[in-house]
Image (cartoon, rainbow, N blue to C red; front, side):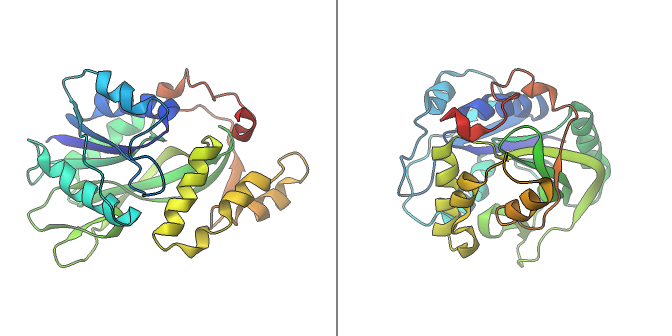
Length: 268
């Protein structure tokens, strides 16, 4: 069994360095695309990510410098997630694709369990719970997540935004990995990157994303109690689950420059 890692990144260097390290340790081959795939912004990162990747040498790393594609954000994303892994020497039925966000992390013990599930399960996909962090490394929404990874099948297809499915369009049924919680630092980004995140979402047709950047910017963590904060932030991350996390973070983040900040918005 071989594992193909796939990561799309853009202007998120502080987290990307850590996620790339995690991916190279876990996967047999890692494909990385640095692109915004949204016409309003530069195609490649402007925060040093592009230069970092070009200079980074590792036998497992495959830096794919694709040409700019002028289309809607989600359509370009689907194209990349569908086509890039098929370039791998390991694109064969029975192997796996690990679709990693550049700010998604796992504990080492959980990666071992994920690998074991890949080897022993008959399911075509795996899923687990996720902590979606906001503003800092404590405040988060604990929710059920989407697919972590999928098995390559003869009848493989791809839905919108890069979701695996059968050729007939039926989505993969995923094995829920109980007691594994991924750490996703979705809303712990610099202002410019957060603004772009929601603009891309709106551009692909997600009207519910309108106004979320303003809410993310305007929420005052010091002037409202937790119950009111949960009510306010539910407008940013639907379905609730807001809590304050005081446990450990994945070891690969030990030296992250934002590990002890109170509010990412104050760094600007």
